[in-house]
Amino acid sequence: MIRRYEQQDIQVLLDLIEQHLSTSSMKDIRFSRTKMSDLLHGNLRNLTFFVNVAVKDGQVVGGFCASLSAYIFSHEVMAVDNIFYIHPDHRDTQLATELVESYIEWAKNRKVRQIRLMNVTGLRPETFEKFAQKFGFRYVGSVHLMEA
Image 1 (cartoon, rainbow, N blue to C red):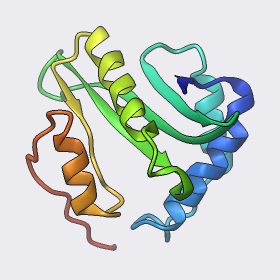
Image 2 (image 1 turned 180 degrees about the horizontal axis):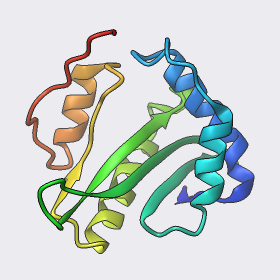
Image 3 (image 1 turned 135 degrees about the vertical axis):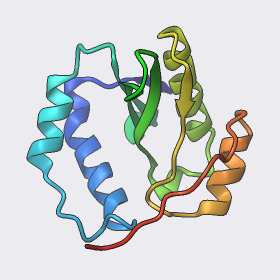
């Protein structure tokens, strides 16, 4: 089941986000539970901020966070995903597909010009690429990272 997040989901979402980041290219960046908690609490009623959760057997096992962003050169808006994660024990389910479909629907309802789906963590790039293509996303570039 996919639904919009609620206040009681925030602690579980924080745990999932921290777990996800700890296994990614972001693992050396200190995760601030306070900052993320403030963001999630502050946007519970904000309809330009998208957070849906994946629920299996009554437990939140994943989530998708996105927001709207204006292009720096235009007043038109795009949807940008910020965090998309399904706990490894539940990746063989349909939940990831349902989360992305709910994101696409949310974005289209807001009349965005483009919908972005990114893999900035660098985890499982080949799998992610095939997954994104199944929804009609196309590869348009890459992220290059250099530690400062």
